[in-house]
Amino acid sequence: MKTIAIYPGKPHSMHLEEIPMPKVTDIPHGRGVLVKVLRVGVDGTDKEINAAEYGNAPEGETFLITGHENFGQVVEVGPNVPDTIKPGNYVVATVRRPGYSIYDQIGLQDMTTDDVYYERGINLRHGYLSEYYVEDAAYIVPLPGILREVGVLLEPLTIAEKGLNQAYEIQRRLKVWQPRRAAVIGAGTVGLLATLAMRLHGLEVTCYSRRLPPYRNSDLITELGAHYISSKQATLTEASTMHGPFDIIFEASGFSPLAFQAAEALGKNGVLVLSSVTGGEKTAEVNADKINQGFVLGNKVMVGTVNASLADFVSGVNDQVKAEAVYPGWLNKLLTTRIDGLESFAELQRHLIEDKEAIKVYVEVAQGM
Image (cartoon, rainbow, N blue to C red):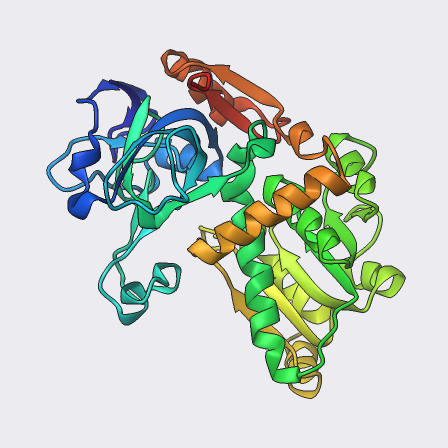
């Protein structure tokens, strides 16, 4: 069976790898689900793994099969798989697998306190850029047929879903919290999907990003009835004056100084959700007293979010279905760059390194059954 893999620690080592065909019986207790892979999206994580910035092979292996944004169709199930998962169903598998902390043991491995984590296609577990995979039914999420063309976007959408779910969970402390206005910082794939999710929650949304409009991403924002403001047009504080105060700010820019600007711009009783995983040693001068005073007197919250739980995947499916009804065709516009077949790994690698205009690059692995 063909797969796309990298050699951890070796930059730009993406290559085709042949491995044995997986079997339902590879998963114990009759809970195996064999899935034919149809599409796999790639993102900055795959780019960084291919650049050997992080990522480790499973124990005993010399390579790591990449790709975590999966979408496929069930081929076969074990005898103890719930009847909600059947051959022919479209499915997405979650990414992180349990480690050893108490959170891992109760199904919240996205909240693990372990230093070592297990993520398919990212660290210590093979990913989904292959012809087939097999997985425990506990990590399989069924999708309705209406999402056949856009199901590959579910995993990146769960980043926004988790952030929003955490914000609402935290603000249960306020008893009657009813956010009205939100800001999303960054207009990449996650920023676009976060804007969508917030609009579906009934929020007025302002997307704040670097590039001047109009361009494809800003047009997609305005199609949702949201505002788009370039950092070349206004500061984040000025954007808050125009369209705020912001009850929620979702930071997805990948530029860490903006997190502190967002902390200053956040409204009273607001939640700042940080989703960017930033590396390097960037520093920034901040209005420390003003931020501190605002958080104390304004009862504000800052929370980091990474990965997603099964519940976030389920809420993502619900929002995708709703999006197809409220904003028909919008999700499909995010699928800008198609790579045909696993054999085209060189083209995939080129797009990861060079393509600055793509919203979502994805590999069309196979057609459905």
